[in-house]
Image (cartoon, rainbow, N blue to C red; front, top):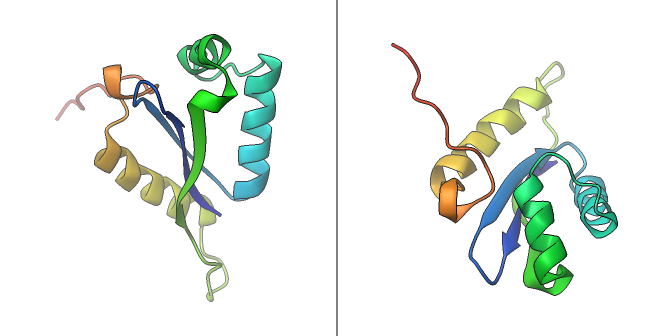
Length: 106
């Protein structure tokens, strides 16, 4: 389990995601893009269709080892790790495929 990225090698744009099963998630994502079925990030699908598979890389950014303590919330652990990578890579606007986060009301 961990965090992954799909990089557009020609434009430098990136999509960040996380999964309990990294190989399965990356395989599913590649299949969806190849079949033209990816719906979560339409701009990623458009770029894939236009540029082709060779213009993209699939990378594992970080891996979470299985916890030693029972009852650990793996989903929460992944959300925190993904948020750290989102902050680090800032995949918004011209830099990525994610919508720009809205400022939180305080």
